[in-house]
Image 1 (tube, rainbow, N blue to C red):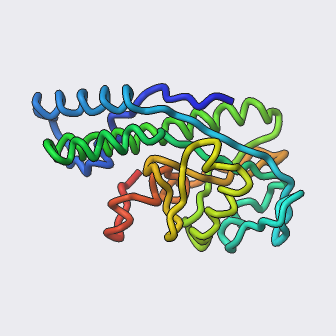
Image 2: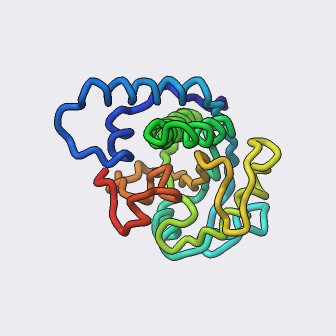
Length: 222
């Protein structure tokens, strides 16, 4: 299943930039447009996924890896199967951002916001493709390590089961953060019944792990 980056949501970018609303000055509009174009040229989206049988408080079928935390089990209460997925924009946007920081910090900040919106788009497209592939069964929204009481240390299990380092060129730091930065791992549940839409909030946001709002104890309001 091919990773697809089909666009960058401008409203999403502005949320990451904490734009206060109102008319956007012409020079800002041009800077946003350039940031989007830079990101789209640099991004090399890739993704991997695997499906597993699921029972609460047991290892995923055929593995020794268990999902940890009460929140994820409540989230998957109606599911008997889960999909583990990972998606990345590749190393190029990170490298470009480092270069921009040396000469134009505002352009670097805009590129970062464009990357956050772009990886959200890649994840949304992947989940839409998975929903079509698993139909007539129904998928939940995404839930990632680090949300609720699901520990970030679960990342190592994702890396092992999905072979993320080899297949996507992504590494995991000693503090369980992923490099390149615009990379996401998530769990999606599979059920025979339609799953209720939850308030998206942080638990379904692709960039919650590196979100500037969460570091300040706030949300973007999405």
